[in-house]
Image (cartoon, rainbow, N blue to C red):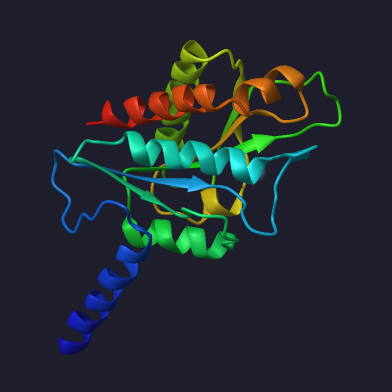
Length: 207
Ligand SMILES: [Zn+2]
């Protein structure tokens, strides 16, 4: 029994390292979500001239943190600075937190610069596949109404983070860095604020 208590204490300490908002207990009125800003450090993700995917998703993630003033909406962030975190570590963080939802933020690229729009990905291998699918279509629909980003569709893909997490979750590709219209939209700070606010509103409505 003593050992169990110790393990829980260690887990609580390690949570506080990356949790902006501390939540030790979950109540019915509380929503817990993990925002995972993709890539980081030496992993730039999509790149176009000086624009990098890792920066865009980090800027949006940080804006979600700043905007969240709801004490009953607990949002954890897998990274808050420009660090490279492995997919295994991100997945372990999510499984430790056991959130109601995680959203992994990404920006796409394509060799055809005419390809544009948002894509949501869920894994059919996940036990939460159907729930994730519903979250993905609702969130992309709300985002497309609030922004000038179109929805390309919701797809199923066996991505590591989707297959290996024990909760609803989705990978959200916000648009294509290779497409001029999407790039101009996604790299603008005011537009990033609109995206962050829409994602936060969506999370708040989950209560
Ligand atoms: Zn990515």
